[in-house]
Length: 298
Image 1 (tube, helix red, strand yellow):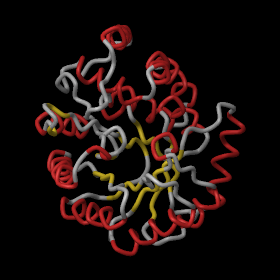
Image 2 (cartoon, rainbow, N blue to C red):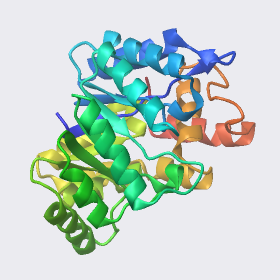
Image 3 (cartoon, one colour):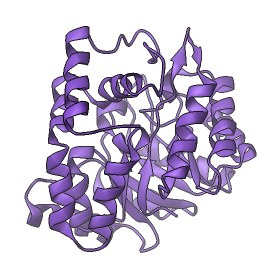
């Protein structure tokens, strides 16, 4: 279940409320595309900006509209008690797994983070994905901490940052992680520009931003890598390079993906939670142009 393509959809907002119709539509599209799993309320899903009640509703909508596709729910929050309540709500909604990021205002230590995962795995029956994204959480896992946490019962997967560009270094990094964690814990790459390289280096999964809005190209890349056709996977990643470049140029992926969803009629204008303003008109025009040049359609 924690292998292949796991896609991260937006949680579109309209008038400062969750746009339930747009969100349900995104989830149905992903299920119909036959992605391997859907991870709702990840960073692309703006979980940190939503109330506990909004997140509970989004979890229920995700499971309701996903058909038979497994749904993982992000539960990260600043306080452990809130995280446990999010986990309970996700389980009640019928989620297949939990995504846990170590959020903080004060800097966290490795022991803080270990205790967080220990507490969650002791109090939930759902499998847990370890979310390592220092760009949003400002916490960096060590390989040793991966190992400590992965020994906890219930840990199913680790979502790692992108691998090195050099193929040999990428393989060595994945081998280093695998040597530190139990064999049943899968390793999934994130950072869409690094997906093909990560899968080629031996990652079990791609935790994908772009796949949450445009599953078709993400599936082509993933299925090629799974079939051992590394050159085809790399070629698809290279074809999408103009998107990856926009992610870098415009301060991350979420603004670009939101502009794409709005351009394709999958979400209303200004669908991100404020104070995130989204892209300027000139930047949106660049996104629209590249989407059209790449033939990216709903």
